[in-house]
Image (cartoon, rainbow, N blue to C red; front, top):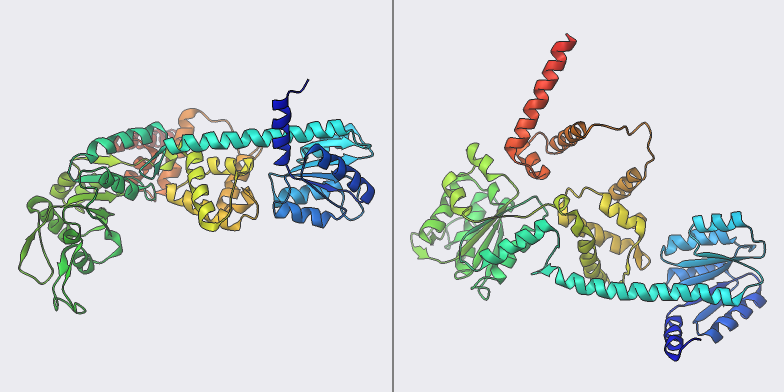
Length: 474
């Protein structure tokens, strides 16, 4: 026997499940809506498939009870269009001509259930109660996920993978000490967030944090930006201005893409680190400053030093403490967390209360390689949030590149695929990464997550095997 608590719980879940009844027979619509209203469900009824689709489109219903045989639009066609508008809607098809084959076909196409006329209202209520209970459980799961999500955020950085936890642990240790830091990692991996976290956790967190993108300026402008200038020191210098080092004196300066600076600029930066002093452009006066220098690069500065493109003394001054930010390909388990983070961010920004991604959109996100790392993922969610017309982002809302990767992932086994030994698969993958890096072995090794020596050794073995094969063929 149903207890009072169970009855109250059932009543509450039913109140949250809006139902639309669609049938070309007005009497059937009235009968079903009346029975469901008495059972405690919010119900609307219509004889127009277009009106029902509009209800789905605007989110006015979570469930549609649709007749299979209607003159304006049959139930299967309605099911297809309803799922296009909202992949999260539940459609229950109702027919007077029940057959097992048609029921299976309906379920395959995405129907939640398939009922026969005359309606068994106990069976219908059981179906609706199951949906209401499922939605209630999902809501509870989302609340728990939200709490867990908050536990996996650190100074705006999202991640729970071992690679990220190791990096964040190093950030916590390093932040306490007022020392220079070099942050390395691929483009778009979040190096500036790490720099900000270092400052926010440091003893001088209340002081200023200045940011400069070294790759965005020519040397003359960069020098003026960092060191300041006096009036008349160059064309356009109409007044005297302090630079970022003076502006952030007592705090920290973040130099992004420091690997793009010229050797002349590197010499001036070295003086800042060694002597803690600067000179404004056009001024003989030397000014003492005390700033923490945090630099970032997506280049292998060791290789740049060997190539004579980066000063060795500056490199060793900067890399006393080096923090490497892993690319997204190295922490794929963080993708769901990042999706949740950016979905909430852009839901708030665009005023669209998204509930999540459809299953096929989630698969597409996990199958993608993410060469642009977290920045690319953020841009994908941002554009999808603008395009999406329902409270679930579907694969059709994603960029074409992700849709293609999704289709490749579901491609059946055929001529495009053949079993290969693991060594051969490894070789094919390394060659593809090298091609993507345009032959740059240093960047390829960084992307593959292996040492340069290991990559060179592998390529040497490959070249020897290829030479032996050619000589054997000759």
